[in-house]
Length: 374
Ligand code: SF4
Ligand code: SF4
Image (tube, rainbow, N blue to C red):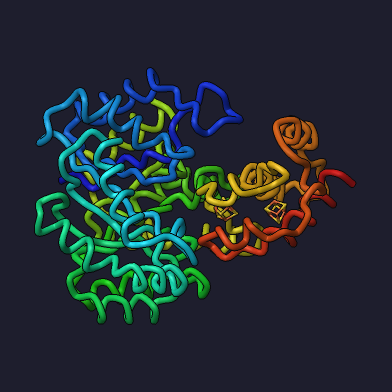
């Protein structure tokens, strides 16, 4: 299996303000191009694109290709059952997912976003046992979980659940040594337990695709034709126990770029990894919101604040701020026209509870408001 997976969470939209409005025609062409070149791994989840991603999977993939042509991964939305929800609800969701995706079984199935809190929900609903039962019934082939917490929590879960076959981790060259995300420590923990690794957020929600000029020059001097995003994906794919690196592709250019170098993938050399360590140093010196643009926070916001869009803009303006140059106020106003301004936040903190990165969203929004609203 090639090491590039197609993440179905950042698909092209016909209406940029509405996550459920996936541009199916474009997405279909992207999927065709991806599969034509021999790639197979497709990753969806219950709440990607406001619940529409699984239906798109059916429309553009499972209703059009023979079952053996693709490896389909889906996930149990544990966060939906926090403090509520029963084992029956969990079973209903699983059946609904098979139906929405149009398949009789999943090749891969994950508990979505395990952390200390969601692990408690999984224990309450006996999710591991439930899914092991589904595996025995032939409704899923391989069981794993995606994970957002410290390495010691990962160690505990893997010790308590040796039936886990693989884990999905946030790994990228900026988070590799980060004490909050602990990419390296989590990877090493998974390997110590003998698990294969699927990588998510290799480009850190797009942050590693748009580098400050001095950082990009460093990389272009070595390989003028490698995009910054490709450097990031290559970094994750170079790890020996990584099976697949997921890329949430949003247009055909990204599909062609990614499939181009991932077909005959060769791991990075030590000198190339050293260049990325230098880029990480440059990026770490800039204040930035560690938002991965997963959009888990958006639906519950009573003020419809486009939180990740503001954070992406704020991050991209950090170099300008450092050099005393003007920020992109017009872009901010354009984003604000589609939802609430940052200053409209009422500090209800629903977003912070939903955020797998544990970001202090309210504090960051206040900085965004000061930067763009004066
Ligand atoms: S704290 Fe602010 S940004 Fe977060 S959900 Fe509430 S209103 Fe929206
Ligand atoms: S603020 Fe958190 S939940 Fe919202 S998009 Fe960013 S990382 Fe995801």
